Image (cartoon, rainbow, N blue to C red; front, side, top):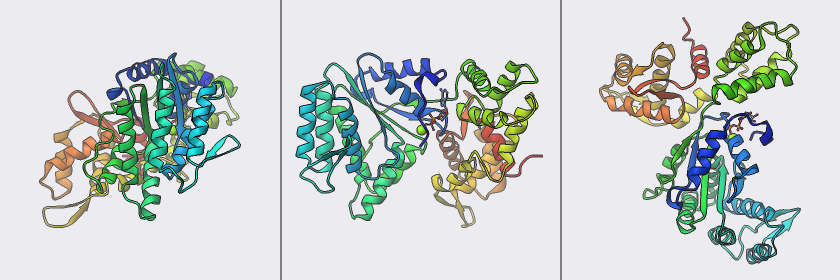
Length: 406
Ligand SMILES: Nc1ncnc2c1ncn2[C@@H]1O[C@H](COP(=O)(O)OP(=O)(O)O)[C@@H](O)[C@H]1O
Ligand SMILES: [Mg+2]
């Protein structure tokens, strides 16, 4: 869980945030959204800025659900956040306290605790909480932001299935969808770095009919715009009082370029560079990135990009001569090939490389894997449907970590 940024310290994102408010103003059936992006791109920062500075007519509840492992705890968090909004209004406070009493809840230090088995089921409590809040805010659009929702779903599924309950996570998703359809002024944002499509696919193994998120359009959150990233770089250099031997704007450009405009890496880099005892040159920036990417201590946890392939691509294929071939091995081979390709590569080019390495005849396996690797933010494709790594930083790390540099 990252620390939340003071909204005044957030660079850029204004156009993106305006676009998101506009999406949320659409009718309720397609006004809810999924945020998709690699971790550390700045999803949480966008949401916390929106929650801190809501546009007129919106009531935003930001829910950090990464640590939640039961529907009961989700209700506790939701009702606690609602309570924090109600201090000013008598009517709403009455409504809240009635619901708390009906659910046998206790308020301790401003936090609501609900019993594990109380008079209301978790479904009843969730429905009543959302219904009451939305009814009491008829002139507002109520936005529930669920940050790190996929983690929560995985944990709920784990814990509840151990306790012998089935389909709890997908039941929760289905109920949230029903509530979105029921309340004209309710919107939700689902965000997370673990691909929600992977989690929903796993959950659906046990319950096939459900399509709980397909009516929530995707909003892709990318790196900062170049000009915003540049302003951030200058700000970071000044804030850390870094002395520059080269022109400061050249150093700032180098920082933006090397960190692909991703604030998290820019912050880390400047933090590291500020410890140098000599005035900074552009080469120092390049060298620092190289040190981070080659270090076996992996301070940027880049190995995550490699290790999660086994989790995401856990299928088992059979090749032409009957040997089993794990899907992640093919995904790795595709990434190896694209990491060393100087130009974006067509599906046909990737397929002929893979066919030369593995005994395969089913081309669609590669088509599907390329699509998944793009959905998982490893790759992006251009208008000619040619694929390349989405981020140079990840590509460079992959080349180093896989020993592919010539
Ligand atoms: N727009 C921004 N301006 C300044 N710093 C940012 C911005 N977006 C992200 N950051 C920095 O990067 C870190 C990671 O961003 P975060 O929003 O937590 O990413 P995510 O939720 O996508 O993993 C933040 O803690 C913050 O320090
Ligand atoms: Mg986050």
